[in-house]
Image 1: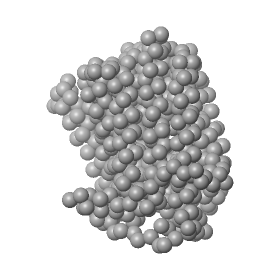
Image 2: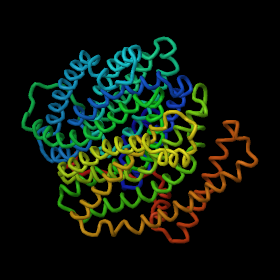
Image 3: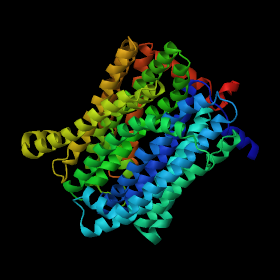
Length: 558
């Protein structure tokens, strides 16, 4: 039994769609656990100050992870590892050991410094917090500083695993991460309060790391401390990761700004903003992350080998399927937003007012689901090309636009009653407090869509007719999504007439059956249009992902 499990974990998956669907399946499982996590948090605390503190405490550790841990990010290391795999005399192992040693020492030092500076940083970041809230946020932030260290190391192991196309173990890690957090909510919080929640996050990060160690060891590339560090290699990695660091930092700074602004909107605004963002991340994670992760190792190898046409074909294929899956998801999330939020979060302290505001915020975020998914792919495509400058410049521009949009639309929302009434009436939240938070979510979506458009235009300049090759898929999917949304909306009214919408079961059944009606109508429309992506998806599923053939890499890839 143990041997079978080890063999399964070490299986290499061939084919873009098979790997993407495998990753998508486990991402879905991870996202389900994330929703269980968020439901538990909403039930325990509601959209109130405690949950505001919890989400605020993540901001500094997340920033450290995005910046310092970018040195060992998958998108940076895989091209280096692919090159080092061609070297003999242990070149690849020496490289991994050197990166591991330098990274661990550096991120530990940064986390230690931030530990002592936390009171000053937290106070400046969240001006809307009172004295008690600041004290709790500082304490929780300090505990969470362990998570970027553990997750950063996990990224290093993940790079090794992905290079060997062992996607299964990589896909399981986030599941364990969420299990650790859920354990903290139910078993550690009752005894240790907010610090117990932080301990659960750290436990999840530890599980995320520890499960990857046996697989890295099985391929003979387990990192270890060394005094023989090739600083030229470290310099190359750092210089390559610097644009990525700045790219991700710009987006994080914009997100920090939105969260900080939410702290001034009112109590519970940070919770509403983060809970709705987490829910909209489900389709983005399942679709965008799965396809971009599955495609990246192949993209890096193809461009490194000079096979640019195959590289372009891979990008076109991944883009088409991201659009094919994400636009219908966008449509259903907007139409079924209230049913989704109420089903996932509607329990305990999370009341109907919290549900309505979070659902409206979810709709604002959902507009950019396709854009967010495509951005992940384009960035990895450019990194595979060794071009980190272009995503950097575009991301800085879009991040600045998010901040500008947040100021502009928040001001318009507060100053012009007509605009405010239009937005509140559209999402049926006229009688709620704190609706300004909707403008923060809208600003994020608007800036993100600008980011995706700029990346696509630049990619078109690099590879002629890229947009032409995905345009048919876009129009097919857009038309189908509109039909799906309309059908789902009509069935909401039909099922609402005989289901008891005052119960969780009634709300769930209304959303489920309406969504299924929309999906079936979408499949029928795609079938009539003889849609290419529908055929490819069916073919990939028929291959049975779990029994995909093993790829035996050539000697130079080991």
